[in-house]
Length: 429
Image (tube, rainbow, N blue to C red; front, side, top):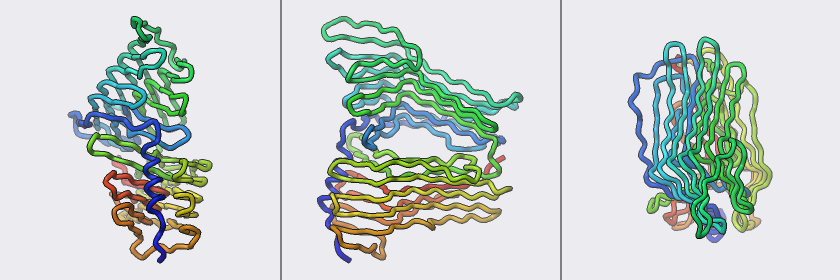
């Protein structure tokens, strides 16, 4: 098989991805802690709670930072679960500093009332100095709670900001009145800050609540920084099986252990597999072409999920992430028709998991057709490893990566193209 001429292309591709502007969050080591709680108790609901302190998402490029202070209770039917996570401080390069933050999530059952709760609190924020001075915000909190009792589903959302102070160059600090939630504060040409965004969605058998303390938009790059987010969700449509997973066109990560830096190429596009499934419908999300200059061009990408509850202890789910074409290094490597598929079927006493449907249509290097070796891996010693059809089995599910590129230079850079993850577990009710 012809060796791929990828040395320069791969190094250029991954280097430009991880050094794009709007860089990573620098945080003190995360110290997760599980709060003391009574023994979990089964309920008749699917429960979910999630929260974090900060997350960065790029605008024209899929650049993001890992969520700091992230705490999560995945879809479960159990009440009595507690999770918490905290970070001593976060430095957002080019934006500012965030003081200590803490996230707590829980599922609770008291009498006949069942709840999912998420709460986040951070001590304060100082934005970088500009020609207009520096902007500081006091403590920020967000809470999202959903519950069900004798009268049905209910929700509560709340966000709070203690105060805003602007310090012009060479002048005394000036207190700015906290605006009405949802009304932006804008520093022309630089930042837009929106406080107190909340959302509640309720429909038969389902309720969702979301509260976000702050949204900071960097206008020049369309970069968004989400701060103090809390989210909670409940459904009564679980029929003996709990589903989870997602599909994405691409994702990636760089972890530099030396300074605790995490940069992610966010899941683009992404579609989550709901706890209860999709009621037998295919749900999908699409994106148009994506270009990371001088490195990686990605054609139209799709993310699809499907899940159906087929009766007692019977369920079927799948997730599929696809990319029409990927061009690395201006034609050094072109791969068309990338599809990752994860399939899970649960029946009484039987679990079926496979990657049927995962495929590549054509692979060319500098215009020459290529074949995937029997090992499924191409390695360029000291530089990069290219893996095709990476599969990981876990309890009740499977994850499939159609194409994974890993740099071997010690940076830990990994780019996944075509991602699918599906899981079906027995509900405890």
